[in-house]
Length: 345
Ligand SMILES: C[S@@+](CC[C@H](N)C(=O)[O-])C[C@H]1O[C@@H](n2cnc3c(N)ncnc32)[C@H](O)[C@@H]1O
Image (spheres, rainbow, N blue to C red):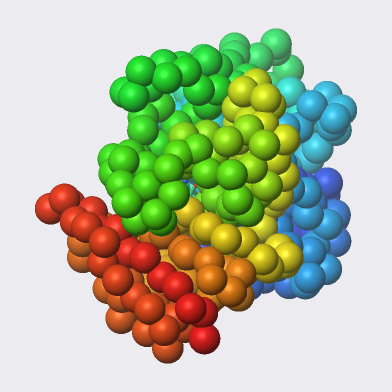
């Protein structure tokens, strides 16, 4: 995230004395500032929420489900806008409900992220005043909550999972707010296609399988038998919610666990399936792939195989060296490569 956005955000958080909610989306570094009295955090990223709790912040991990909070109970909400429109509209609507009359919503974001449009829409929804300020390319919008009933924005029913038939012709429960929510990842489809040849086992897999960074569960659902000893994990609250619902609907008896790249899970998996992220929010986080590889190394059972799919330009083989004795590129299709890792060191 741009430095200006971070500095605006931390200034707005360091104003104690008023009941404030900080809505932390995926773009926030975990060491932004020390806890401030009267400021609570809600976020959909498990690693961030864990890090904030460790620093002493009162922090809640959820897919921005604020229903338990009372109407007109907050003085201020600070929100660095998210990537997806339904999420932003959902949170502006919730701000209109949660702020006291005269309370303040602060939106921070870049022009290219649509902040000016959100500013206008948020004013319509909240019905109060608007003050816009710019630092570098970053806008800070202050909106006050008026006295009138809110004019709700269309959030496409953000909270609800929805059934969608995706490009593989199969139905999934999914929702905006999670990675690639309305399509099958082409790399993941390639991995599923090649998985029998890669692992030497026909599908569905019966063994102890980990879907590392599971999203809505595409890899697990397409690779595993319903009675496999399956664990799915992700960092994103919406992904976990969707994955749980998909597995349940198709009769799987699996564990779905929130974790940062598998940290905290018990080792002993025969097969690890992973299409690791390389984007974190608006930026690119260099060490994410390393984090996934380190956990795959720790979690793999002796004799097990970790099957990764990555874009061709990701130097996964180099990053995995020193962690696995066997590193093999099983196939590439000109866009993605399938890397097989075994004999963890
Ligand atoms: C490329 S997507 C793959 C999703 C899914 N496996 C599929 O094939 O459609 C990467 C996934 O990693 C998740 N992710 C990102 N950072 C993570 C982290 N630190 N720990 C665990 N999962 C993470 C994202 O939420 C996303 O669901």
